[in-house]
Image (cartoon, rainbow, N blue to C red):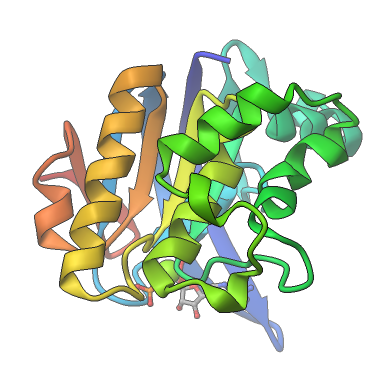
Length: 222
Ligand SMILES: Nc1ncnc2c1ncn2[C@@H]1O[C@H](COP(=O)(O)OP(=O)(O)OP(=O)(O)O)[C@@H](O)[C@H]1O
Ligand SMILES: [Mg+2]
């Protein structure tokens, strides 16, 4: 997959029959290698837009297209295999499985894909995030920054073209945030992976090619 596009994408939630409009006719196009930041106040709709662009949630109206395919034409299993092949996800909280080692956590996406593993490839990716010496440790023995590096390795293991990040440095101190930011930017450049990032972090935002702000349900380029 080389392109993700939304066309007049709107999203509302209904709570007790009351409509909460979050996004109104959003048009955005993201190509491989793009660095896209989504900013906006808390509750503006950043996470919602990420979820819908990644097809983890459905639009209320409008279209999402992956290359030239509208996602409406795909069934759930086609969509989920497409996500597993093309997307990586990194969240504010790492969502690692505590009973598994670093290595095992990183391998989860491949297990779901039923793909055999080439051990040296896996080791390369773990080396890329600087955790070769922690392969067999469990998450509880790692620092916050290290856990986030495991989450990044897990997001890379399927060789995605797009990584969706929701406040990836939101839970880290300044020094660790900087290390994680640099790692993400290096990885994006090296592998030509698009980063689509919801963030409040102005240091991080500065490095992005396209900086958008969500305000009053609309997306504007900053
Ligand atoms: N599943 C849901 N059901 C109902 N309302 C929702 C749901 N998800 C999000 N919302 C509402 O949509 C709006 C946007 O939420 P969203 O999480 O996208 O904001 P955000 O910009 O990511 O905020 P933050 O910076 O706090 O993470 C909020 O008003 C929120 O309450
Ligand atoms: Mg959010």
